[in-house]
Amino acid sequence: SNAPAFEMNEVHRTNATKDTYTGPGTDKVASTTYINTYDSSPTGTPYDDQVEYAVPSPDGGSILACRRYDYSLSEVRFIYITKLDASANIEWTYRVDPNYQNGYQNEDILSVYQTTDGSIYMLGSFHGPSSQGSDLMIKKLTSSGTLVYTRFYNYSSSSNPYFVGAPRYASMTQSSTGHIYVSFSLMNSSSGYVNGLMEISSLGIPQWTSRIHEAYKVKMLTSGLIGVITGTGVTLMDSDGNGMTEISLPAMATYDVIDQGTAYYFVGSNGN
Image 1: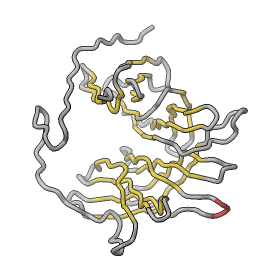
Image 2: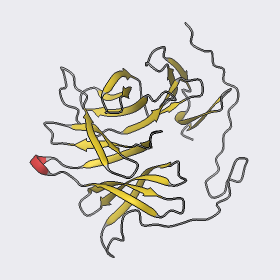
Image 3: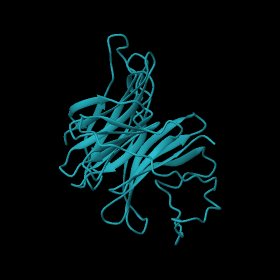
């Protein structure tokens, strides 16, 4: 009953590419630095080091969520977090090797987030054998790259006891009061996709979980509300996951929302 009212103000569309667009809001690139995010692979090896996600760190550096893909085996060799300083020099790297024990396959990485206390959270997926399916995986590191814990989160139901298929998306945000929220989109073989939001403690213990359609990304808004970016807009709720309000943009695939306090700007595509 207290849900705020929203009105569509204006829509801007561009067909420009990253190479030709010179309209308002573009920034000049001051310099480009090429780095080996992990090491120099021997010439001829079929490896591809991929940065899946990157966030700025308070010291002016960056935190990169990466993976090394092996094209000869068609699989991820390993995943890792690389911490860069403000000059793009590598400070440390935390590596997660594939776990092939007892038939388990490997891990993959989805995103990374740093909380206000300096802790770094690696969000990814753990692929197990068909009898156990796959889990959403969260690893917590210290600011210097030391592992604190690893947690696995599994969706189950009476009709489908195992979550089969890797998590598609996962993201994290933190409120001004220290609450940590994780959005997830999980592929389930019997019921399609299981999407939602959960609050976890600093120890990784779930506090509550809420089902949301197509939860791609979660952000804290200036109003204090939680904003979950979905495939067709954003779902708003309070810090306890209550009072859902959906802002729907049915003709637009939404990728992000920019909160300017008095207005929300949606970034997306209409498929054209």
